Length: 184
Image (tube, rainbow, N blue to C red; front, side, top):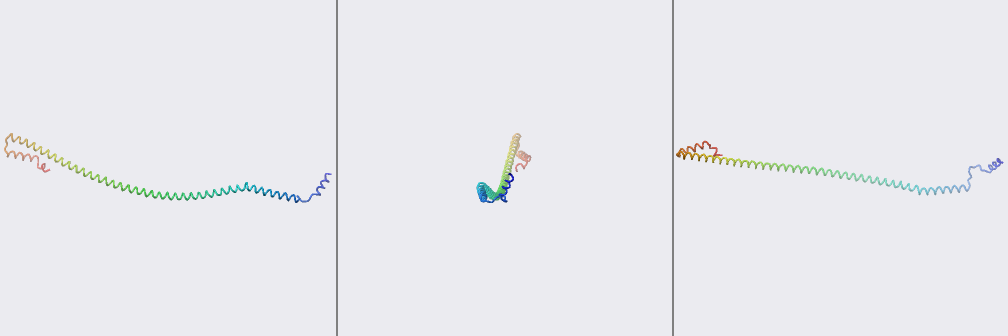
């Protein structure tokens, strides 16, 4: 019994692996439709956000590149401005140094002129002082002569000397003092 049944069941089977009937086609179509709907749902829920992330990333990279380019251009512009300012500063430094040199030369000339004036004043003062000293010495000599003359006069009076003796004494005194004293 067991073998007979198997043989009977084998006789009714088709030699194909699976039977292509209407139900199989319907199930296959339904499966394809479910896969397509699933693809659309996944595409909407997974692929579109991934595309959006990639698009946003691409946009961000593009903006970063543009920003980097504009920053580079700005840096070049600032560098040119900086170099121009450095050149201006160098010119200003040269001008300031030239002005300082000119001022120093003018100050040196003024100091030199002032020193010459001061030296001339000192020399003039020294000459005046020498002249005054000479005058003072001359006055002292004259006072000495007067005192000597009064001593001589005292001797003359004491000895009752006549005028010829008195003249001789004055001449002798003048010779002792010297003629140079009266000339200077």
